[in-house]
Image (cartoon, rainbow, N blue to C red; front, side, top):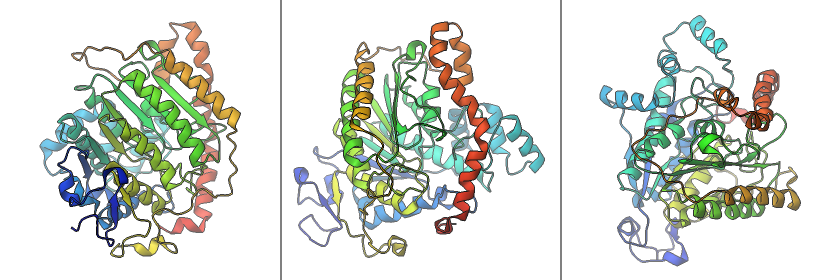
Length: 478
């Protein structure tokens, strides 16, 4: 490894940390954060099926970029091992802290069950197997990405890392009893529950274009986890939750925030809004750890997204959160144009390590042909045909309302560390709780109605899947 004076290097330090110390040694100095990179090579080999927009292969592209730029030389690398039954038993016990045993057993036996048995469970639990198909090795796939998130959590808990990364995680739609939105096990909720054993307060930040609904639901009644999601909201855009009015209940009142946005938002408007909210929020809530879901379907030209963010704009949010100096776990999430997913997550791996990556992709990169014709880490993704519908007045009004909610917080809550938090089940359970307070029920009715409408709009989702099948680009990573 050469030093940063060599112009042939694929990356170089930001001006504020410029140094001639070799990159693999810089990790031990006081000016660098300790970064760990967690992965399970097997996770990349699974396949949701022909034409399905979720492509685990995007993780392999990400790994190739990360190693191509040499970032593996300046991080602690963790290859997660699930080879022993003891490891699997420990993992399953943690999974059952959130998911029901009936659902976990269904996933465990899904490839051995008859089609009729599986269909019966799917119908009983209103599961859309177009979004969440049954494929070979499904349960192992779930264990892989969940255990990798827990590996990142462990690195933070044991103070081995300041920043821990798992790009295979971030599946924020999985519910207690069922899969949803391409997600089967909710590694984020499972990971945060583990963090709460050693951390009084955890902040969850979500920049996926889809609302982080299941994470919000799980922690909707506690003040120990603050959830905030920046996402598209309106019409029948999945999951049709995440309104400004959703702010938590009981002890969790005002400990959930949502930033609903419209089509076409660009880098400047998004990052300014993000910083103006996250800064005061961190100051008020004073989290001991931050978990950040970095879904890349908020990038321009995503196959399922409608924003106009670029790789650098998306990464600017990660850079800002890193600058806050709070222990940080970065996980993946959505993202359905694999080459742009990998670009963003590689760039954000560089941000975690406080290095700037050169625009031209490394020459020794496998699958480099997929990045033609520009072979750039920073393609122009902000010039799509989607108009920005987020007016200045709309964004300003949204900011004011959210900052007002933050001001209602009575400082960082003090908590008893000897009590275990039991996550909420889902919106139906929350509604049962809310019936004790008629006023709050009225405030929540609109959200619940949206949830009920989801089952009436299955045809809309099927239409989208059919469009993907007819899209020639869907053949790219079958």
